[in-house]
Image (cartoon, rainbow, N blue to C red; front, side, top):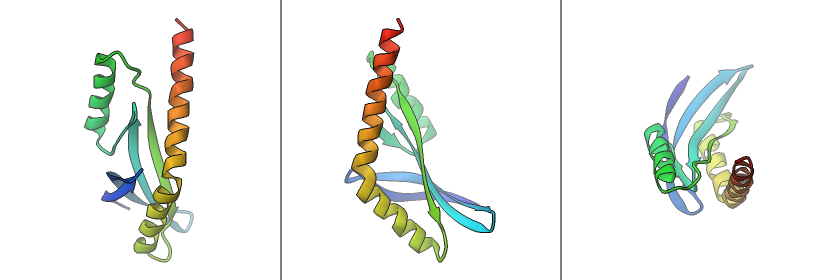
Length: 114
């Protein structure tokens, strides 16, 4: 229905995320999305590719994730944005830990396959 960008905080660091409003099954959903590449977060497709390239050039893994979070948009977009911001504040460190652990496991898996 619509898309844009907004600023939030991830691990107390400012982060711009892409936003979108999705209609379906009688509900409106507000979604935010961004990339996590080798420990860096960005909403930019180009910046994510550059992070991957930089990691490869320095001999590091380029393990990455596309992250999307969403919430019901009713009663308003302001409430939805507030809910997503609260999620980022409350769950940001848990999300980061999960990403780091997944990256660690994937790197071990990739290194053992050689």
